[in-house]
Image (cartoon, rainbow, N blue to C red; front, side):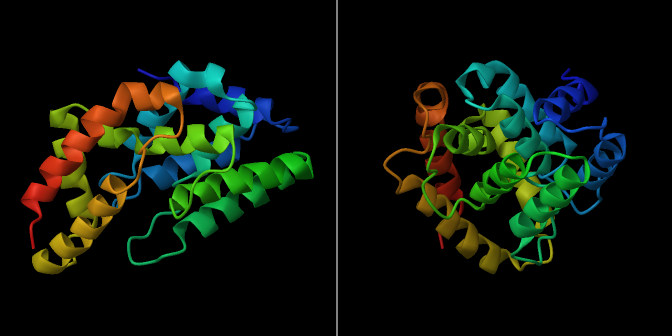
Length: 207
């Protein structure tokens, strides 16, 4: 299993932080353990960091991508629409507080913000981060089914008909993209399975 602390130490040092960031690490791990998280939990963080470990060589600034993964779901409240903004701001405050250069702080902030998935990533590191975040779409059938259940768990307060309608819209928005993954590595590894998973999920969410 991925060693979270090893990843943290490498990433925090990799962005030029002056200290060990132990308090930030503890706060982030606690955040990912919050009870309202079905999918956006330590399991998801571990999966993302594990994929990064495999694709680390694709990163231009590996430390920045890795630390952005740590922060990308740091704040998660299903009833709000500004989770990414709040997560990115947490990264900015934490990194600045430990002496990270302002240019690095702002790049990390931008990386966290691309996980809103509202546009096309502009650079290689952004593409890599987004591909890692969306790799769950190309997971094996059993894990994808678990992911679907975990998402429903997070939105348990939403009535079934409304949830199915909103979920269908999201799934279709992904399927309509020319490519789900921006990097050739993730496209070759996950694209075909992801499209099959999305089609299957859509079939279960017919309005």
